Amino acid sequence: MRLQLLSDLHLETEVFVPTPAPDAELLVLAGDIDSSWAGLELFRDWPVPVLFVAGNHEFDERELTQTWPALRERCTQLGLRLLECESAVLADTAGKRIRFVATTRWCDFDLFGPSQRERAMRAGRYFMKVMRSTRHGAAFDAAAVREEALVCGAWLSSELKRPKGAWDATVAITHFAPSLRSADPRYGDQPGTASFCNADDALLPFADLWIHGHLHCQHDYRVEHPGGATRVVCNSRGHARKGEAAAHQPLLVLEV
Image 1 (cartoon, rainbow, N blue to C red):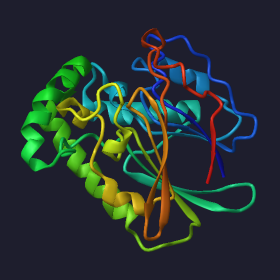
Image 2: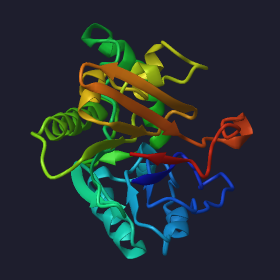
Image 3: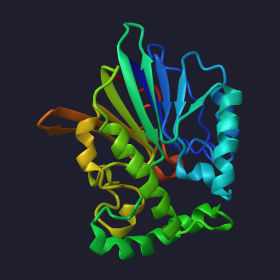
Image 4: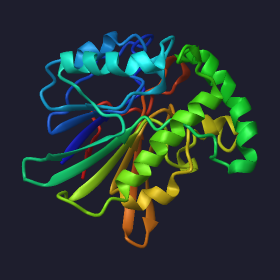
């Protein structure tokens, strides 16, 4: 299956017009498309099916518990398929069956291990303040983010480890990155990076392809393991004013 990949378009401030890749069979939106949700309209009547995984900024200035049903309804109206702690098996034109395992996968702040968790959570407070979100009426702070992360992380692990079923390949889609290898080279190995990457490296062997966003840089690397190799790809656009969009590939197509 040929997948077009877009993420971190930030259409609430950026000017960008998405174009369908002529040979794609599916479009994957890996989060942070538009914090206002208005830009999702651009994907109405897209020529191929669209899978959408929400990013953290889809929740900006919103109540988390109310946002999920509202966002799902908005996606349904536009003909997009929102996946959160859900999997879907889709067949390509040749009949190959691809299992998509998808969740926002919030950060659990354990990227550098439990001993560094508190330090990572302190650094993460800044990013939570930027979102200005709530959960059950209280501030969606680092502790609440970790609670959400543990739930979706447990689901992700369980789903990826399911015995092989009626599918030929598995694609994991998360907004947050699965490995420190995806860290933005501008910031690298520092506490704040735990707000962008999770230590999900042990789960990589259970996917043939892992797609993520969140980091405003591009990645395409392979992780070798006894069962073969997993390709990890991030095609975030980011903010043009910061030069982050320079290497973005708007027509990038991945084959799985």
